[in-house]
Amino acid sequence: MTTNLPFMHHVGFYASDFEASQRIFTAALETLHITAGYRTDSFVEFWPEGGDDTPSFALEPADDPSKVTRRAHVAFSAPHRAAVDAFHEAAVAAGAVSRHAPRFWPEYRAYCAFLRDPDQNNIEALHKEL
Image (cartoon, rainbow, N blue to C red; front, side):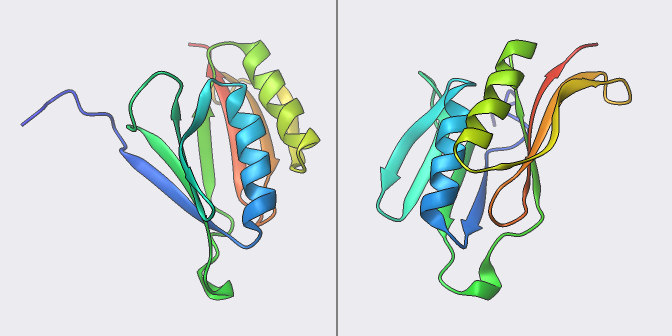
């Protein structure tokens, strides 16, 4: 058994508007060097540029309105504050709604930005400052 496994292998969202969600996540995640490692017409999986598929984030269309992922929260690590700023800017330009512009949150000891995707999911980028 391998003991150096990441905390999480993958997470996925089912989108009501796959094209809009794909546009937002692609633009935002590219600023963090997270790219679409695998893509079809109805599925996209993102993982760290030049890495393997673990950890990864997947997005696909919901086949039924009752199966849409709503109001979930996912946070992506950023290497520095400028990457958090770029994430926020790219996501808003692609159609996300800003919840909180980038700033330092002392209670989290992190520089963070928060956005909403079309399904009201809370999308975050953060640079931890210990």
